[in-house]
Length: 91
Image (cartoon, rainbow, N blue to C red; front, side, top):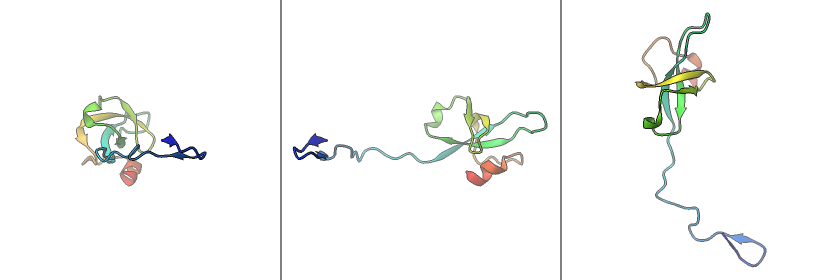
């Protein structure tokens, strides 16, 4: 951006345009919650906004709002019966 002299900022040619940059795609990872009292451990979906190699098994906020540990050994959707119904709907 530069000053045009008339009180208006004007954008330089291609200042913010970069055709080599790609937009990220929405990816989901599988995460396992812990059993807590009467609540069973369930599989959840986690939106991933970084490379799968950067997932380190830490707890992440799931699609439904639960904290669960991400695993790289399973892929979402998980072929299991103990899957969070809210995550299944939203992911």
